Image (cartoon, rainbow, N blue to C red):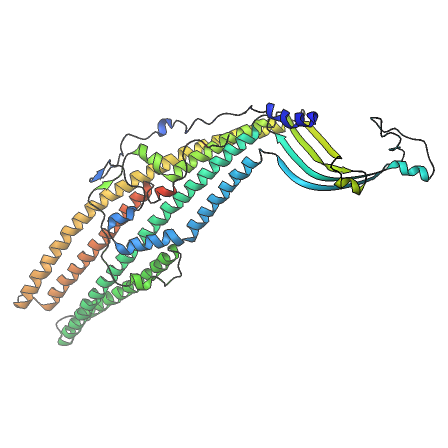
Length: 497
């Protein structure tokens, strides 16, 4: 029994060495390092750290809040990303379990017929020896029967720490999957908000086009009346009719876009197209962004955006894989043991005095592999270099995304201010023209044209307002907002050693 205990305990004294580089955190960015503040920072943007989750509530639109709630609860793409997280975490548990022995119950029956070896006459010696040819009765000495019922165990000793590195890589990949799921949430909430703004914009545009159609019909009737009186040429009637048909075509296109965005919103919310039509049918004003926008600084952006954190975790996993490849250079010790009861007859299975113990340690060391291990190590090192380059690229793309969205937001604010002034001027002009028409100073056609210009200026302002809100949504997306802090995956180096 002491020898069996030695074979069980000896492997515990052999481990402890972990080969490969230790991951020391994100690499230095060098020339890719961001400034202390955003270069394209827009007026009204503050360095206050923004809240990560539920940024859309700042738009104060209850319908949008309800759509976001439904999407986060039922969107299939988000559910698929969360399922990948569960897969990755199960892989971590599997890799951890691989470091431990595997045990099971077994029942064994062995029958061996070895001609030329006298098993009976050599039972007391250490090695069976060939026996001379014998008669048929003597052939019974060449047969062996063995029955065993008990437990078996298998264990591969992690001498070089390859399995430790596998656990580290699995932990890093699980964290990366969690951050990818968070990034899917960021993309989803922003895409839904963009589609919602587009629906409200198209609904208001359709209302303006219908009002414009009514004015153009009146203008066409007036042109036809003047043509019959001989006061205007025929091309004036044709010109008014072409303008009417063009507006009709524009209205049909806008109505089709409304249906497209309604379908998109339903699918984003995890529902069938058409299911959200009753909720979105009543027109609402386009939600406006707040006057002050919290954007933080570039350093907080790098810590917050889930795609950057996922890239960093992928780099950690690639670093751990180098250790996995280097561990192949070292010997492997595996251990197989059997403990049970049995003997040469079935009756021995119930005899507790017949305890059988088998311990089979095995040493494997690939001394000659013609460079296979070296090539595998070189491959993992190149994979780590690729992961580091991808991390820097993700950082640069994130900074570019944020700076571009801030620049567009600032430009769109100026555009809205200019169009608001134009709309006020057009409204004043239309009111003045109505007064002059009522006094008989100008014709009805001139008054209708001023009203049409007012509607056009108002429509342009609403479209610019929608673009402003859309650029605000783009800022939130570029800052990596829109994922719940309660679902935040663990940060820092992967555990598991």
